[in-house]
Image (cartoon, rainbow over all chains, first blue to last red; front, side, top):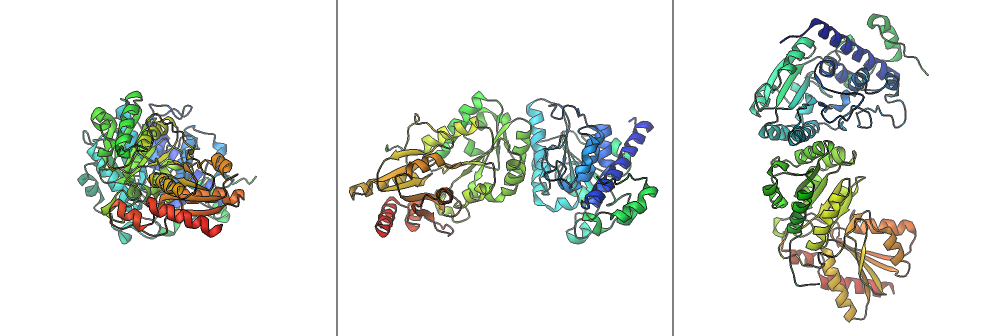
Length: 281
Length: 314
């Protein structure tokens, strides 16, 4: 498989842009799920830049690939990437949680172009994605459906209902990406309700499984290019990540699930991380 | 009323097949409940999905199909659709106003001996608490047929209540028109207004006959659409009828009685009002007749209750 260095570099830069946007939006708003957004940066950058067939000028293009952010609380990262690829103008990022009835609320809604499903309650995305994947078969279309879930999210039983049914329907055009940052709201997943052996769980449900470093763009690209991993089976990419990745004080810290920088902390980090001006207006 | 008997579920399946023949976007998703779709599944196997005993997934899959331009139906025992999957109904379907048709079966007392887990007496309350969803409770198989067609003509989420017993009495003919949001006066009388829906309509009509023999003349309205309730008709009728009784095979909280009460109270209509239905209790195992007797909802009990209600306030 040919993965060009240039492509990898563009994706890496996009991921860095996601991180900066997440910090900028959340600090300005004084709210947001920062940790769970930062772990998503390479996953979303790789998919939106390197994999998904999209037409941001025509968000409802019927042949597009679909991506559902089932872990809707990771929306800071989603908003950044959607603006970067051109679904809406970057100036709207300042509306994140800071304007009544904003199109960039604390969990994503379809009123924002590029958002494929309302999410925020965990355990919904795979079933919705399954419906879209079935529709592709009915319409004889080639598009793929990607569902990005959290790892703690997988404690919701509805995921496994859908996983079972999707394998039964041989939905080779359905892909789940698990952001395996090992932390959930209250503690490490393995301390609360053990997920491991996670890869084995998925494969026993009839899914093709690949485990990758979720911050390694090359690994992510290679995995996504290989989909479906097994003929006539849905695929799952378990992407091992670090919650809060890129913000040292937040990395791998449970309290950063729903916590943001103070303006002072942001100013102090501005030079080191080359962050943008908060620019009040 | 004829002596005919027919299941509302059977009629739904007949109408679904016709709708499916005309519109290739109509698809069905079952949660091990495919039999409720009747011949549709045989006729259109490629448009029929079954996710197993997994109501949440059924609704989520339907949402995904609707987001891709399909018109999906989902069905299950009403309790498992309206309670087990209510969060998917809320987040996946209702908030996005998706064109999903949700059919809860075995409602009211029709699941009989299956006991309280299956007796659906609170489903309307659950669904009615969510914005955007039209709620239809057809009174008989003929109305279930025309309501099914109307439901697919309408664009947006609908919750329809069915029963599914062979011995459901037939009230209407196939020619009777059904329109979403329109109540219909079936009997006119000067003394009291009875508003009923679903399985309660038949006994309400019977009760009106009993009352007539006693010199009490009831107006009987079929309010098959519980949401939006027909405010225009209620306004018209309460301009000259000052006693209103609602009858439903559902808890008196959150269903038809609540919908009518809320409207009339806020309007300041000042009518005397009585809700008949299950009074904040769970169901229990019994035949449909036993259950109706137990909850005071057979025709004799309705007549007696209405008569006493009129006497007490006169």
